Amino acid sequence: VQFHAQLDPALPEWVMTDTKRLKEVLCHLLENAFKFTPSGQVHLSIRQDGRHMLFEVQDTGVGIPEAQQAFIFNRFEHADLQTHTRFGGTGLGLAICKGLVQLFEGDIGLQSQPGQGSRFWFRIPLHACEAPDTPLLRQPPAVASTRFSLLLVDDNPVNLKVAGLMCQQLWPDATLHSVNSGQACLQWLQTQAVDLVLMDLVMPEMDGLETTRAIRQSAAPLCHMAVIGLTASSHPQDHAACVQAGMNDVLLKPLDREQLHRSVQAQLLRRGVTHG
Image (cartoon, rainbow, N blue to C red):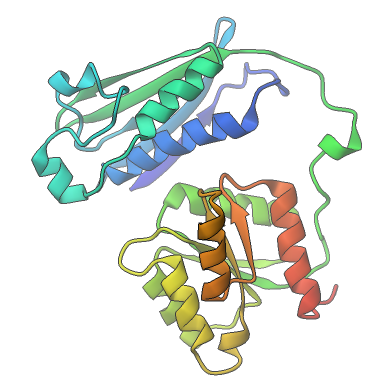
């Protein structure tokens, strides 16, 4: 699946918004697009629409029958048994999106044709603002001279891209690798050496917990690998499960740059990764 993103150059450089809620809506829509697009394209566009920002996620996936479109934002269950059987699972992702967009005093909708794909969009008020002057609001500094290697493990290509871009900005001298499953992670680590692994928890077949346990049961030095878990769940039991599996730290998704910076830097310092 190919992913394309387009940002309207007419948008102001800085806007005032709730970034956490905005990321959550975008993540839900993009995850659904990739989940129901076995091949083809997913396209994200962000543009100015009068006094609003318009976000559009368009895919070439299975599409949604017209009869299901009227209530799909009320509770998202897969449109029919065939789709459910093929892709599995149910969720409330689109209902959550609708609720979050309403908190922005915005609106959300879709157009879809079965077999041709879907276009989900939402629109929220545009509040342009000046660049923040407070140092705490600026991006954390990059550890420019720290040389280390990092493996990203996530079955979602959007998450891989976002995490990869963050790491490149924070540590431009780092060597980044990525795989899309727990099994691929274990196979990769059998022949390659890295200093740290960023591990998603929810993956098909072999999840992040099982993969981390397998790493801890491996022979040295692999068993001592630094593993940082990535999860969308803030439940204490889920975080405890990560620690029990052998993860060194757990970060909440959507990723926050400052938290990622602190966590990775702490693991590097513990392992004596030096500036060079």
